[in-house]
Length: 428
Image (cartoon, rainbow, N blue to C red; front, top):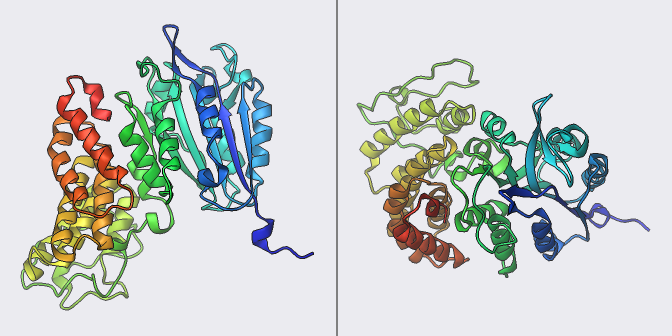
């Protein structure tokens, strides 16, 4: 009997619990508890797929080759794949490589009893883009933490979406909590149907709600999120459209900084040289600005975007949709650069402007509110988080949200910020 491609596909969930993280005989992170809680969630919800799926829980493994075999089997899955890892991140002192410590791993046995981190990327590298999610809930020990700070991230594979948190060594665990906050809130959000949020939204909500220790590494980083292929790499406000192209150039536009390097394939047009509406055949500056940002040239991208915004304001006015579009571009550039306070302020402003002009049901208003909520969740400076909180709560409260938890989480964090007397409350 002939089976079509969809019938042949299967999904796979691989849950891996590494070694426990302990501080002064107190358990900081209990991977087994996390695994047990996540295993209770249906695979269809974890994968966001209705395909038949297999779930494998690997708890208590002591041999890295056993884990490697399971990774290999999972990577061969033709359908969607979720790999979840929880445990202690450590380092091989001789090779200075990061490892996931397995059960029984000691400082002297890292090379023989733990999983080298690059094995994960090697096994997932050949998978098609868009089918693989890696979810991490880790704690770094004192040997791994400096190396992790040096790397600035913990990549898994270019073809995989990676979400998660890595707590620093010697953090104080939440009292009475067996399941860690990040995993617990991810699970709670999956269980609150009927509609499943996307992985980015699930991650943002989990980070916002979990009481993460100060200094926690949140993945993906702003740069990694901005460099992802597909729609996430180039949002609608960076795409060419006859409705949102920059308007006719005013007589005396603001000066535009020129790129410091000539390596880009297409130079951005100087506003002073544009006599009419920019065309989709190369005159639109937005693809070039976005390319600068994804290449890490954030200052140049921000300067160019601000210069174009200035002449749009002159030509169309502050209340125009064109001006708001450039505020959104600047907001996402700030996110990509890791400037979450600026990104939050700009997203809130864009959302308020679109709400006044387009109404509460407009998709652009909801997109701006979602951007503001995500970026505000990353603001760790308490005075700034307090400054932006009321505006964000007011914006969310004015919208018919598909998920009311967004407003609830924002209200809860704002209340925690107002009553907190310790820096840790910044992560609520």
